[in-house]
Length: 108
Figure 1 (tube, helix red, strand yellow):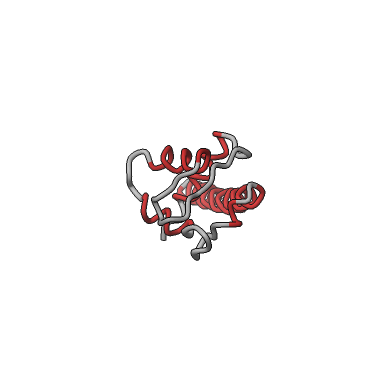
Figure 2: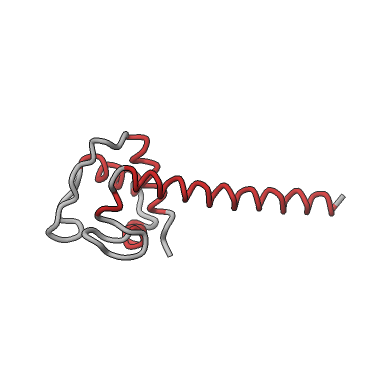
């Protein structure tokens, strides 16, 4: 019985890992399709901060998903320096939330 439970747990963990990787690939594709990667990269500063820098800045802060979703949708200025982030009208509110959650998951 213990072997069956262990095997089921191992299979569930493998499935979660594969679905997480798939979700990360999907989110990277979404970011690319919405031109986010013209100014941002996962691990290095371009025009704007890297997604890992954003994740580190907002880690554990209440309302971080809403703050980032709002910035994605409506733009923001003065948070990361003098270059403003423009609004992204091509992104839906649901996509903005998904992107914000994904970015926050990239904290090292």
